Image (cartoon, rainbow over all chains, first blue to last red; front, side, top):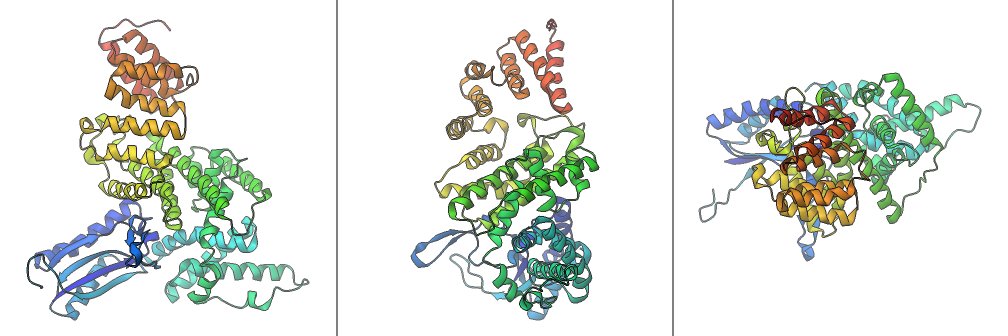
Length: 123
Length: 420
């Protein structure tokens, strides 16, 4: 089963990190990324630019607005696509990520996903 | 990251909103700051035990407000107490109430807080110092360090500036659209100045003054979160990010300036550039151009050029021409001349800047640019004269050293040293 592991935290705080603090967190996370990659379980993983860089297209009347679609206290900062045999393993993976990126606030949301590939079958 | 480090970050992030709201309650900056300090002390005690609140800013506002009211009550036992609902114990208050109290106001609260720092009677450097102290929460020591002055001198400056602000009559009513946009303009200008304070540093000063650039970007992001649909705020943030992206490439290990054409572009921050380009792209969709957007667009053209030779100088010339119309300034014309020299040659650029001599007679960059153009035209004696004038006007050692490099090169080429 493929799971999306969505990373939420306060953008205000994360984007206040100095380059060194940011590099440190990314380096610690990379250890987990490498492990998942070595196990052949890591799909696309990405970090979103801040919500201030976002533009939203609303279905009603095709309205275009600046900013995220939904205003929240914590923002979706990025996500992983990971192959996990069940929720248990997905939670373990998210715990590994949490250990690499501790601190308070925010967290990971685990969502099973279906992958659509152009011209191909649905995974 | 330790708990304490996280708490510190959460408090710093919540600071503008919390102090802005407390200022609206108490209408006095000192009281608001003190209330915030009290709330922070309680947070340091309570958060590690009880876990962090869902909304740190709301928590700090309510706890700070109650602490201040308690204090007023203690100080004035004889006078009438404030209404009960204002002094109920809200130490562990839940978020919805805070949202009701502040959700509608916080944007104007933060804008007001930033705006009072931009009091027109205060010289720009003092506006910046006060904003760093009050809004960003930097210590006086950190600010003194960034401005390269002693701590006590900076303390005095900030105290005087705050006294000036306290006497100013800033309306606390919710501002109307015109007033809001005026405030936003003043605050954006202050953030831009703050960035330039840091950006113009060189050599040994970089470490101390680089903080100013980072704080400016932080404030620009804050403004952008509050005014997500303002193209000029997108432009300002993009501009700062695109300029800051080059930070690691702008100076050599000895602190000497490295010109754009000689910079190692691999050292530019891809992350800052990506965000800056995304923002200017978003801004231009609004079709409401302004000076920050145009400057960001110029910076974007530099950022997009993989090599210096790939720079789209014709487009940069065109953008500077637009900027000249929007905000006529001799300095902009001077910058435009660099683009003109690439597109039409050094003579055209020289013709463009020579009429500025009267007005830019005290400006380092004027003589630096003039010298460089004369050098390209092979007019060595005149170039040397311009470079010597530039050195006399240099405000940082890095600037002076950079010009000396040109002079040394001229000398090596065996040209006679003129008398000054």
